[in-house]
Structures are given as C-alpha cells and as structure tokens.
Image (tube, rainbow, N blue to C red):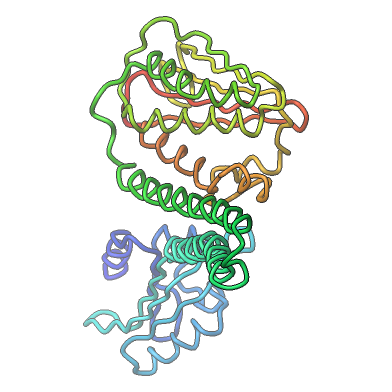
Length: 350
C-alpha cells in the first residue's frame, strides 16, 4: 500500500525523481527519471542507477542525518548530456524513511546564459571597433592634422562612416529586441502581400540599378490578402532583396517570385511562398545552418564593408516565426542563393 502511494506521488512530480530507503536502495522512480537514467527497478542499489560520486556522497550525508543536500552537475550519456541541479531531501514518514532524489534539468538556463554572454561579447566587439576608430581620428584631428584641411576632410568622412555603422547596429539591436518581445503574439491585422512586394521592389530599384543588377518580380500582379504585420514583413523582404543585390548581385539578376501553395506540409495547410533568388557566388553549405544566428557572417570583412550589422537575418527569422511561417535557405558555391519565405494563408496554432 505504501509503495503504491509512493509511486503515485512520484508520477505527479514534474521533474525526474527517485525515492530510496535507509539502505540506499531504490524504492520508486517516476517515468522522467527512468527516461534520463534508464530502468530503476525497486530494490536495486541507487549507486548502480546513478554512478556519480558527488550525488552518492550527498545521498550518504542525508541518510546519515543531514536534512538536504543540493549540487549542480552534468548527467547523461555522451549523446545526451544534461546540465542538472540535483536535490537530495530526507524523507521521514510513519511508514517510510529514506530520501528523495530530484533532478532538475537546467540546460536551457545554461544555454540562455551562454547566449547572453556571447551576445554581450559580440555587441561589445562590434561597437568597440568603430569607437576605437573615432577616438583615434579625434585625437589626430586635435593634434598632427589640426591644420591639414585635406586630412581633416578625409578623416571626417571615415568618422561619419563609422558613426553610421554604430547607428545601424543600435537600430538593429532595438529592432531585434522589439521583434523578440512580439514573437509570441500572432499578428491581428491583415496585409496585401502582392502590393507590399511591389512597394519593396520599387523602393530598392534605384539601389539595384546603381549596382547594375536587374530586379525581376514575378507572380505579384493581383491581390493577396493574408494576416500579417505590414511593417515587419516589409523589413523581411527589404532585408532579403537588399542582401541579394549586395552579395549576389554579381550575377546581374535578382528574381523575386510570389507563388501560392495549395498545401504546404510544414505549415499544414495552404500558404504563400516568396522566394528571393540571385545568380551570384553562392554560399558554402556548411554556413547555411548558422546564417540566422546573431552576428554570424560568412565574410566578416565584406559584410562590414557593405554596411551589414550581422543581425539582419536574425531579425528576419524572428519576424517569420511570429507569423508562424518558415524560412528556407538554399545555396551552392558558384550557383547563387535562394531565400524562401513561407507564410500560412491563415495563422493557426502551428
């Protein structure tokens, strides 16, 4: 009877948990614990289920009279390592005496903290470079170049460029922050996708012409109403088309294609596809999975020279996620690149 009640209680606990008796033998384990550690039949010594010296030392201390012990460590097999907080608590009930071992997965917290540290380090690095240049030129203008008009004009041009770079970075950081805040809220308003694309292409036409790139828009003759945030989707397509002109414009043509999909398996229903394809140099396949990471660049020097902040595709990814859509990236070295945005015709719980 006692063992049945104990098993019922363990099943109700939302974290992996095992119960052991005074002899450090398993009395019960919930399904989460067995999924993490493997089978844990009653009567088996705890040390054979979790072979970790620190945990077993903590269990010995609690069984010897200590009320509670808590430690953080990494558990699991090599293919599934989990950063955990393990709490061993004394159990002293009329019909049972022993200890409970609870294992809380803190991997997500650790990953979040690592992402935060990386983000701060990246932002610091991205801001330090232009700031260092600005400070150096200010010092030069106050000293050796004080009366050199030609040098002064040249340095002021560079300073303006570096200040613009910092301004773009800060604007993208603020944009990313706003997008992340809204990501869980589905857009409530509607847009007209074909007209939106026509507007973006018209806006970027002068820049494309200056780069000697032809912009072709296909399939956007009619009207395509669907739910969405117009400002955010303009940002998505502006970024993708501008990138295609900047980095894939060597092929001379960038093609934007709007298509209706009767059934998109990933989105589980009808959808609209907007692809932005270029005939440029292409991207090596090993870079593709990381392109939407913050500050990830295939060619750091070229990206900075072109005015890129390394945040554009991260913003694009979050906006598309908010619209419950998908971003597909296809590219091969020497064959150009294709970025495809899939947007559901109706936003449901995808």
